[in-house]
Image 1 (cartoon, rainbow, N blue to C red):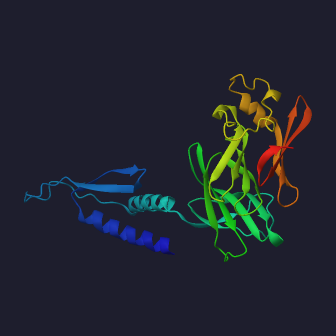
Image 2: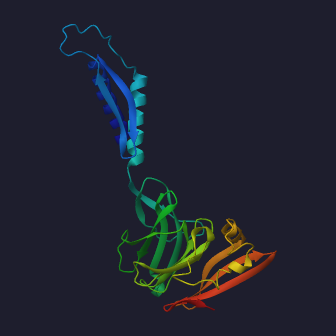
Image 3: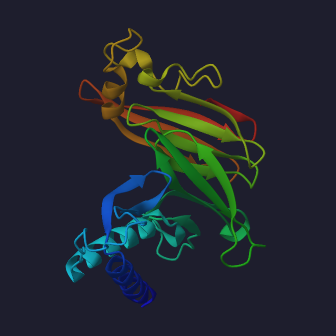
Length: 281
């Protein structure tokens, strides 16, 4: 209803403006990344001349006005971020609570983790924004003391997708990462806010082992051309993986599992995560 009224008011204003400016001609609209489309009117009349009939009157049809108004309204609406619900991702429980976020597009949760006494704590992650190759994730936390709709939010600009979360408590948790469809990685949180360390295997994006050595989990030697600088190394690896996930062990530790196929044979690599970090199983 508000949008309909806005369109009617804008249409009325534009018709009045264009009808009053009999000597005005529109300059083609200009659109910039910093703001909505702007329509500029330039006068071609000599304001000192007494003869005002030298320039013919320019009339705008209703169709032209409606088209211009639609361009303005559509541009403004598409640029506005509003509060939208985060929708459960595939495989999410039906009754799991979801946060809301500021966005101008459909938002779907990527991963979640239920933990704590009586499963009273929850992490949910989703992509809140993307800029070319960079993705901003929000990792939302909700505990037993949180009122409905209240969430702690942690930002993470790394990787394309969070494919898994495992939490020991509010401060200690890990995220499993999809590195731009080229490989996988793991990020560790030790203070509940900042990414303290991460490691990955994704050849196109360099060596991630300097922070967290995960070579025992991501076996570069198992893939043709791995480590030889061939551009398809990461693609071969990524396409060979059939599973990358966490298995809870006792509520305070988990098993990180990588499953892949090589020469038609299934393989499984594992690591253990607990409050002391990640280590080979």
